[in-house]
Image (cartoon, rainbow, N blue to C red; front, side, top):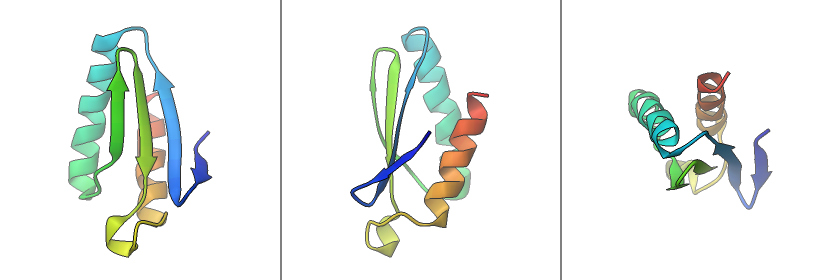
Length: 77
């Protein structure tokens, strides 16, 4: 579940290994580019962490962030 904190939507995903995590990141990158809404994220080995907010709206959580979060969740279902 995404957690809203400090004007960001946050969530961490864990995968089997680095290759699976990187593949997930590649899928997210394609979706984010199509939405023109790019995440703040990090990857360490099998873990991918996100912090989403909308820079154009003053770095707060907007509907764009919720839509991207839902699309990210759909990738791991």
